[in-house]
Length: 347
Image (tube, rainbow, N blue to C red; front, side, top):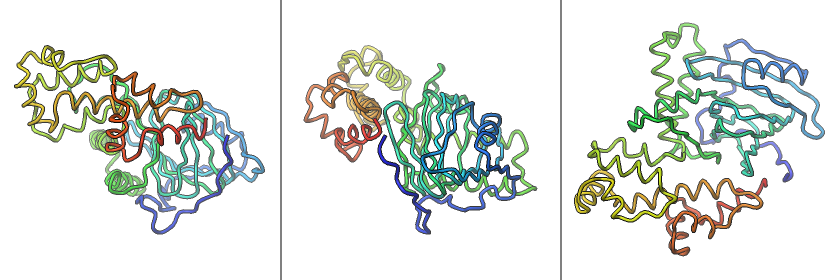
């Protein structure tokens, strides 16, 4: 494991809107200085059964927790005071995290990421993880029902089957990307902090929770981003959606334009024109974009012993490595080798 970083305090120019030390401040506070007491409390009503240990040279626990519920969403304000390490199995729910003060680190599979003050990140439900809370760190985190995200995705896309949505673990600090999400969560905290909140009404509660799920799908990068991105466009013909689904299901296989035309059931010219009009790309361009997203997911999982950039590119049918690297950098703002190196830090 790499050396642990020092605490990074929140500053007035933090880019994420949620940095108020009084988030959920009027909610009852659970407080303890006993590590095992804190672990049992968290396992019962906050997260899942897990292991909790002090970081080296840390012993002065001052655990504090507040909570508010909104249907399939549970909002938590939490701090340990001391530095601790959490080791948890797959959660079964999404964990959206706003780091208000200090710094956290997360390891999942062989990927590693640092969550500084002013950042937003999300842990997926599907795999075990470790999380280091450094001394002085405080987070606002939302436990979001997995089925809520899946249901919202189905409403957006019309996909009937259950789809596994996996968000990127890397933190986001840019308010141009998650400003609306941050303000929405801030609004929920402010309202739930008020005894006269109308969010206790079941229908209002459900709609607010669905709004949060929609913002997550629109704001935070995930493996099905392309499937929800066109939702604001005019309604595309059924055969465009059919081809998109075929591409998303078979992107790792060899696909020619003739295959897509056959799936669509229309002429090649009609298919090309529809993609140009409704998706501002071509069918093969859409295929390439999906494969680039898959490549980024593979490289981000990286770690020691991970496939090379060339191996990932070849496995996803990118015939020309140089062009793959150029397209990857144009889409994600960094070369594929940099994504792989960053994933290797905690390997």
